[in-house]
Structure formats: structure tokens, C-alpha cells
Image (cartoon, rainbow, N blue to C red; front, top):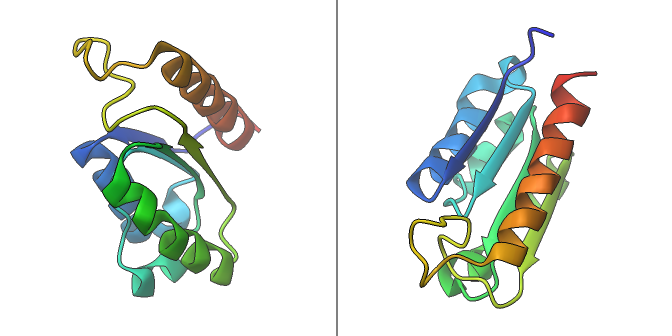
Length: 122
């Protein structure tokens, strides 16, 4: 379709958020997994549809989510945010069994594919 999307995990999730800021309308969809949010003052530059995934036990990012969500709302950015109860930072990484949360990973990945289908294929 010529539309661009990005996803990333941990540091890459933060990069996905930063690309949403920096690329403006050149990026159609961003899906950060447990990535740091951009500066609130920069959120108004986001034109992509943003889908955020955080593990419920990832205290630092869960505590930061309300500020990011408020900035997304204020900027009228299309977004969804999901916090997965019982999941930790890195819950999608099946190479680290102590972190991997199969139920959260499957649900987050399904939502990610649906998001990209909605905002990149249409």
C-alpha cells in the first residue's frame, strides 16, 4: 500500500515511539512494546496510529503510561494502550523463559497484526 509501520521491543519500542514523532505523516502506524514514551511536548508531532503494549509488572513504564496517554488524547492521536496483568518487561521474548508470558505475548501479537492490517492495508 506504500504505507509504513514500525514495531520495536524495549529500546526498540522507544525507537518506535521516536519514529512516530520524527516521521510525522510519513509513518502510518507504530506499535511499541514496553518502550519509553517520547517527551510529552513532542507527542503533538505524531500522526501515526499508535498501539502501546506494557507488562503490568513493568512499574516504571506503567507509571509513565498515564502521562503519555494524556498527551496522545490532547494531540488527538489515534491510539490504544494495553497493560497485561502479571506480565513483566520483555514478556514477548520467548528466549527468556523467566520473562516470557505466553498468554500476554499471543494477545499482544494478535492486536499488533490487527493494528497493522487496519492502518497499513486500508
